[in-house]
Image 1 (spheres, rainbow, N blue to C red):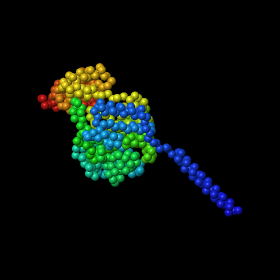
Image 2 (cartoon, helix red, strand yellow):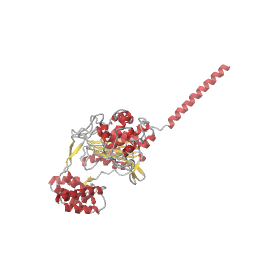
Image 3 (cartoon, rainbow, N blue to C red):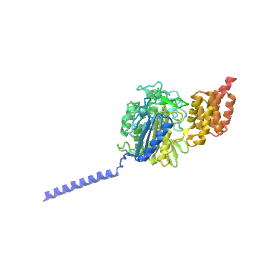
Image 4 (cartoon, rainbow, N blue to C red):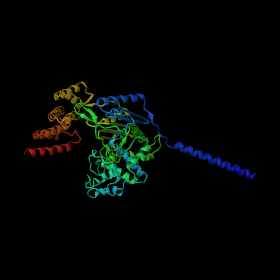
Length: 517
């Protein structure tokens, strides 16, 4: 009898153990956040945005353009046009150069290394790169966080790709190249000075910390985990080629012969991706990693990735590779570039789980990627509107047809009456006509006439008078240069760069007057 009781007791304990184990497993599954799955947009909405892209691509003579958008659980990608001169279709899986969208992507990798305990964001760079050096002593205080937020004070240098360096030490060459330069300000972390070198040096840090090329680390540890199968920090086969404007009157384009990639600047501008991959990336960010693939990092990590780090104005700030604006209590994360014949813009509104990315294989007078802002507004509830065409396009084509600049002015006046909502008639758009004539067509006389027409239309625009002054400098007319400068000085700044433009013009006026004397 005793033996039987013991057997029943053991059986009862085993059943109780299994029951509690099942309860624990089921409980853990219930409390674990559900992974999000991408869903398609409603057909009516995709048809709207397809028509917008088609009209935009045609009106603005854009070779190829892609759009990726996320709203809640819905994801959609679309493309139009060609990827190269042979008119290979620009598809949702066509790789393209994303320019400085590289920065928030690279920042994700750096934050992951910090999360893994492999580096400290507040440690000085010299602790990781002993050869990092600048003039003075304050450079020794520059930390990884300062590089991430462009608060290091490292000067801005134009990126060169006409003599690319693909060697293993290319990033170290970049780091060492600023050894004799002084930081822009004495105390790092006190101001924002945007420089691509911040992220090129961060790529060098990744190499030294992981003991492998940063491109390999990104491919395996970031792109692979995010499901971005076609993304890389090197140019891959089938990449879309950049185009440039070949005629600034007819605005015809041709494929560029120079591809904008140099491994020395790979960290700041070497990111290649596709519309499909960038949609996947936005979906993962907006869902804090809870995408259908797996949880790449914890949700707290994504709060850090999309965090405000340094205020740059009343409603503007900078994050880890992002520009941030605040509108109606909402943070909007932006990253855009016009780089080497490519235009890119990513817009994220985390609170609404909205993301839009627009990319094109041409850059120049206008930025095709700005279409992304209109689509983002549409996803928040606004009407979907076609971007206004710069009036300079219509005026340039009128001049190309007849050769008479008076016909360009007549086109401006006629369209302002008949199609006021289809074109951008602002002082900036009109002035662009003169800028093209002066700097691209190299017709000084017609440029001067264009700027004179602009100040007639916009007598209260400092921007118009500043450009008129530059045309007079080129014409070596010191007297009228001085008069145009004096007009611009008393008008409100509608250019955003009045002070620097005035300084440039005054310096050139002094040189002009010295030569005459």
